[in-house]
Amino acid sequence: MKKPILLIFTALLAIITLESFEAGKRRDGTDPGHTGSPGDSLKTCIVCHGGVNEFQAGWITSNIPESGFEPGKTYTITATNTNIGFNIFGFQVSPQAKDGKLVGEIIVTNKTETKLVGDNKYITYTVFGVDGQDSKSWSFDWKAPDETVNEVTFYGAFNSNMDGHKFSDKTTTTNLRVFRKGFTSVKETQTNISNWIAYKPFGSNQINLNGHSNDNGLMEVTLYNLKGQKTWSKSFLVQTGNNNISEEITELPAGIYVLNFNLNGSNLTKKVYLP
Image 1: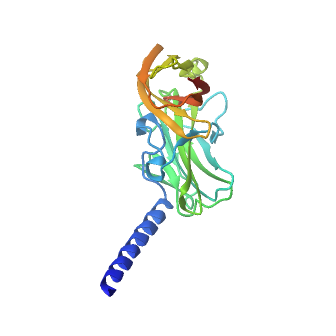
Image 2 (image 1 turned 60 degrees about the vertical axis):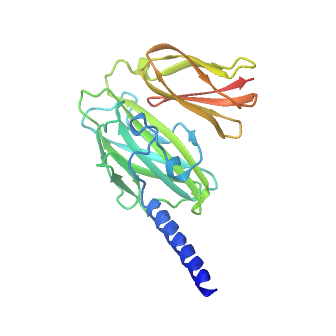
Image 3 (image 1 turned 90 degrees about the vertical axis):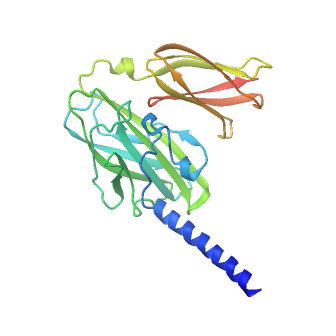
């Protein structure tokens, strides 16, 4: 009788030790390649933490002037994770080109709370940079690339947690797109996607997506219900110009949904009614 009890106790101890190790590991930064960028295959914190991605504009800011960055100059970038009621925060940010390559140089200015990973392509938190109440910010410097680069997108994924309990995790993505000073096409290229609509004929299992794109690439389309729960997601290759996409979608109750389109750092969100 004592032997089975001992085995059970040993197994439980091993599980607790493993979970403690994993929790400690995650408190000291995250693995490279989880910013939600196309170059990172759209991977974010949900790979480990579960849940759904929510997009929130404005979580990455900078002191780059409206006229644009100057090649070779250094600027300060700030990433802010804000979620009321949460007290443990994480992040990962990377400045990338459309093909996923690192653009410019990330410079750590707070070695206590931030560090570089993935051959210096990503900046993330350390074990001393996770605690906060309702909000947490991290700052770092970025040295702009040479004059051949016209635009850069800072991709970021953030995770919020309550006392280390995994079930309460919340993952948020954001991005900041900046342009070189003197780049004349800024206004024309700031929006990659526009005028996209979605409709589902009554009694049909097909959802139709129509819209215009100013860029080629892999567009992720995600459907959420009004509770914020992801009900459907699909990625499509789109071309510059007008696109018409039809996809089978089943077991979707009639109602109002929130539809998010993401293409190369541009996001478009709108409410739709699907019968």
